[in-house]
Image (cartoon, rainbow, N blue to C red; front, side, top):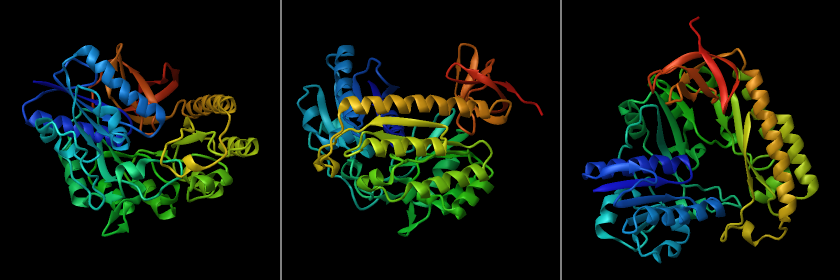
Length: 416
């Protein structure tokens, strides 16, 4: 029997989907990913924005066009938020929310339409994910305790829970991939014996001699000690994705973000001092509740001061049930669009500057796939790179970046 897993949303969902694929494989299913013909589909949904939730619903329509008789299991944040929007679909045989993914085959067999209760107290381990040739996600933590006013995730993922250190290290040792990405819902809150321990984890991972990245971080985890650990690590890829959300203190306060823009700027300045050509990226929400013209101008000017490598820009999406949904101060949609266009233009400028800074610099590149005769993949500092010729997928190659090319930069092999 054929089963396909379709993933929307974050890197944690990616990890969990790869684990579900492995569960299905062990039980004899012929496994696939994405919108291909299958008998059973697992849809791992997203609810971080209204758009993410809408796309999650649209996937079901697309599945039924491929196979009108398909059996569908829906899991993830959109289900946790509102299971009824999926349960009324006649093809949906089971729902899992964010608890039950670790036992997805049992849900298929039981055709369970009762949403499993969300686990808040302990980290639930998953099966090892399906092995990839290039990059492997490693989940270290789940849930979040921060309760930013715009965010539903703590309600949909539960409280912060950390995975056992040795369990993480053993999974990394077992993977054949040459690059791993440590990921979690709020990995900055990774703990051992209820004490913050990301520094310990990073130090232990570096000893395994495998190239590694950190996914999204809170800026306040990057104190001087943490930056020194990363700067001295032999295998760390210098890409820092720091979720800023706004570069205005008044807006940050309404968002319940626990830092000031001055603290954030100090940290990004230190990163640039300690690392050669680091990639520093961020997320920005445009048009949050009460964002005035002056607040937006403050954000715009501070973003220029920081000089990111690139930004992910999102118009504010009201999520029912959050604190922000009860706030006054809606920003007119036309104003939000205008502000968004300005940030998109600034982002193009950031990317161009980052590419220009990296011309004629030497980096290591992970070959992820072959496209139109080029080996393509990301450099250690997260530049999408095109190397002419076919190299082994999963290999790491020393390259010299030449110039902007297609969606990133072209490169040549560096033999020095």
